[in-house]
Image 1 (cartoon, helix red, strand yellow):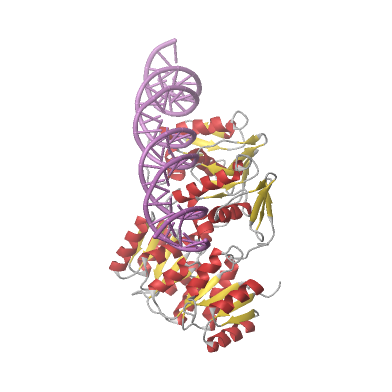
Image 2 (tube, each protein chain N blue to C red):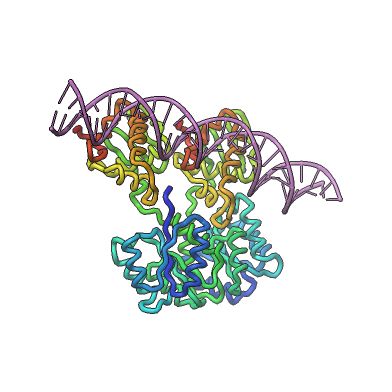
Length: 230
Length: 230
DNA sequence: ACCCGCTGTCACATATCTGTAACAGTAATC
DNA sequence: GATTACTGTTACAGATATGTGACAGCGGGT
């Protein structure tokens, strides 16, 4: 499972560092930004899974940034937790109304931060991800984590499962070994490209003679998953 | 849809009245209790949909009451929002650890109260909590707190019971160890993920050879409860 | 104070997965 | 047909994930 990436937006570097340390210990990847402009660039570029946003920032206020993100369809789905300095009623409400999913009052403990963060991430599983995929007589259900064909369940290892899930949601397109490594293993791994071949082989074997034709070799280019031949 | 019933537990009658007025204007039914004893009686008797609980009460502290309620399976599902007087970190943490689903710092505005209350209610809508569950020859009756199969009663510890109840009401879906910790133990605990494995083991043992196949290991993903084979 | 059941964690055993290398097979090019 | 580049297949050792029993701490009950 790839790590979740959290963007921390706060003008105080001390706070950014503290939060970064706490989150990385808990297994998250962290990004930092000191102002709204830098934050926006990072968000568009890196697409973090969650944003910790200070309410008061030097240039544009955090609330403004939150509003802008929620208006943009490409960023609207990213959950936001607001960090508020004081215990002002109106701030909390404003934060929530601006589209934030939760807020935390400073000072906060790492434990509390983690608890809230976990809760928000759990709540905001993007829609569509959990709907069943069906291609060429194969059905993959992400919720039950099952793959079945007309003749019964298929036995897949974790990597085979991820690879099949990727292929079924990206049919009829050739992916190079390098692209597959990025998509199935994660962007930050360094593996031999032939590793892909081996897992393709394992996946084909798991699919059996009824369905292994769905994985097509494109010589010199990579692999393609398609219900159509050739 | 029938009105939701909210129980307000606070020793200051002024606060109880204010909250009652606010909530009734918003279409909720309200109950009031000035101390933990009265509260407990009302909870068992009237089974409110949500409890607003003052942290500090004359006889037993609110936290104690929360703990007791969360230990009792017949009341554990009722969400609790703690009302804390000061902005003390420890109080917040303690409140959450005691099983509360959220907390609000006094003084709070009616707007905030309603917002939180709505959020908590939305999150925890227990569909037919009191009806018996039956899966794969197993029957779990929440009212009598009993689990039985064709061969007789099953002996389950508290955690095993909660886990089985969760599984039986969420079949055919894989849950990660982290999700199970959240769902069975609560979102605010920090336990080793392997703890889940051990309790899975205990539950399997308790289910016996006739039913332990209902709990399926999904390598690399978590566990699944299903009457269908892997 | 004592017992006893429950809980969370650890340590070790077992099962399964993974990446790589090595070799065999195949297609393209000349 | 020979050469070359590419892909298929297998084996295997190391890495990971999970199963399992043991144990100490805790709290409730006596």
